[in-house]
Image (tube, rainbow, N blue to C red; front, top):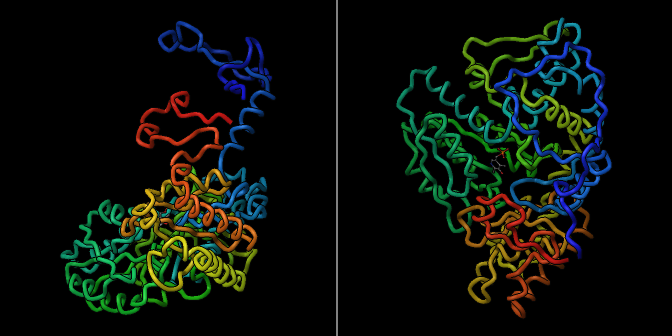
Amino acid sequence: MNKIKTIFETGAPGRCAVMPEPLDVPDVSLPEVFQRDTPLALTELSEMDVVRHFTRLSRRNFGVDSHFYPLGSCTMKYNPKISESVASLPGFASLHPGLTLVPAYRETCQGALEVVYELERLLAEIAGMAAGCLQPMAGAHGELTGVLLIAAYHRSKNDMKRDTILIPDSAHGTNPASAAMAGFKTVTLPSNAQGSVDYDAYAALMGEHVAGVMLTCPNTHGLFEPHVAEIAALAHEHGALMYYDGANLNAILGKCRPGDLGFDVMHYNLHKTFGTPHGMGGPGSGAIAVGERLAPFLPNPRVVKNDGIYDLHFGDSSIGRMAPFFGNFLVALRAYVYILAVGGEGLKKISENAVLNANYVLARLKEHWRPAFDGLCMHECLLTAADMTADHGIRALDVAKALLDRGFHAPTVYFPLTVKEGLMIEPTETESQETLDDFCDAMLEIARSAIEDPESLHHAPVSLPVGRLNEAQAARNLDCAALPQNKS
Ligand SMILES: *Cc1c(COP(=O)(O)O)cnc(C)c1O
């Protein structure tokens, strides 16, 4: 194939894609110190050049709208387009995200304030908790908010000895990072051979110095914590609070509620569970919900409803603002549309099908790729390539790259850290059985290749524009000309 010229090698002087409007303000020159000595060497392109460039680039990427994307712990489900159409209504899209900075917002922004109020109410209901808050911009930001609320609670009781948060070894790295950012020490809870929190080890670590426990349930092994209720009860007995990492909520929507399980505060990843787009660093939403005792400390301002009018309330005990205004309002709006569109029964079906799909994949693959833990899984199944590594030198990374060649996004690999050569597959509820079968067939074919021709997998991907990267080198040297290019 002839190498396609990059956009930086095309173009011609004077070619142009925009016709600027005539100036309607006085023409001023930049002060001389800010002026360049030589003109900037920019490529000059037509509109069509630019459209082709970005269209071509977009097709080189993997996305939920183009590929099956079973990235464990990320819930890469289909994002229904109805949410996009509502979020692009000019009344929402053109609104200042501050809402209350809009002149006469009490008259002009009632609809947007209603979205905030109603979504917080719905999220609290789904959580089985008292109140919600949309401010946090991502899951990790929700965690930080939640841990700060826990700190504010203990401070309000003048209980200053609690300096520790307990976190399982299977937790997402953001959990200990958030606790540390909020000023706490973190202590790791070991998992047992079944992949759950070792209850006896937990009980031995619990004490009056513990401010809170952060749990993910189902955990990142894809397993529901069998002792979750006892864990919460013991924490409360010792005056500690329970934080629920809601990134895996897709497994239990409408089936059980973190508040009923004994949790005091949680975050959602609206960009995972509630069908808003994510990836590439945002924008997301890590909205939170809290039980009664943490509600007074929620970030300011709160949207309240007085005599049918939505207005703002500033609480005296609030931890302050965690973000300007109301977080990523348009992301939250998409989640609101999603929840209204699927309804209460729909939420239940989402979890039922998410769990069914994960177990279908597990059942088809488990003879060939060893499950990390026995039994059924929840919304994701965790396999390990460790046997293949020992017997044939094939690592989880080889499997991930081989899947790219077969038209699938890779699952999450090497996470959680508790499992060697982990392959964490989360199919989500939105995939058809045919797609799951195609994926499982590819995984079985890769298993055969691993045994018969392992060398062939070490070079994958061979069909994509860029070949196998030296990952450390690629992160440091961003010059794409230095990357291994595939010939096709
Ligand atoms: C994704 C995830 C987070 C962090 O969420 P972000 O929105 O990426 O900050 C936390 N915990 C778990 C288990 C996750 O999967």
